Image (cartoon, rainbow, N blue to C red; front, side, top):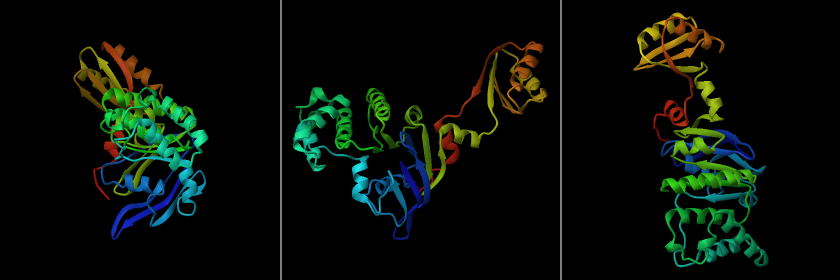
Length: 308
């Protein structure tokens, strides 16, 4: 649904985006991650046809942002990180204004607005002034405005920034509902635990370049080809460490408190061999689990906080 190919953007001599390429499949919730100044917002603005690239191209639904920007705008709903609402209009009037801007026929406009109000759970505040809304409701109103022309692709730049925990949970649930409706969602956020919950693929960007992209599990497997495990014992952890090291099935064995961590060498059948060795040694095992790195761990491994 989105193809970014050799994308470059310069501001005078400053290289903000340095020849990046990645693909977003139809129906993905795709996380776009990077430190401040990495080039994320520049990329998003190009994708949304608000900024022209220096070179390279982005295609959305097969349409080029350079050659067919007006066609791309029909396909894309863009929600910026800093958005405004018109304080002295009602929620209904705000959505009616943007429906008219998208040239939705007056006869259809009421049905469209009713639909997005129901989807974003704003029906109860339709006649309230925008200035009276909470930040979470304003965030949902901006998303409702983004949806009025029924775009196939949603480009959301920091959509949950500043929301309280309840509003973030509700917003995540709404994103999942939109995906079930067939929307492709391109999502930038600094809240990495939030992205882990909703994204099925990510791109990690630093200093204008993509340092990793793909599914979270796929990136993990490339970074950590050996499976990691943690054994929790009741006591004698140092002795357990020695047994695991001597099993011939583990490497990088370390011990902290009552937990021994190791990388498995060879096939998964090595795990029961290690457990049997510990049992034969009289070590009381409390728990055994495979250690999975999370998105925050990936981010810290792959980035150094450098800006473009």
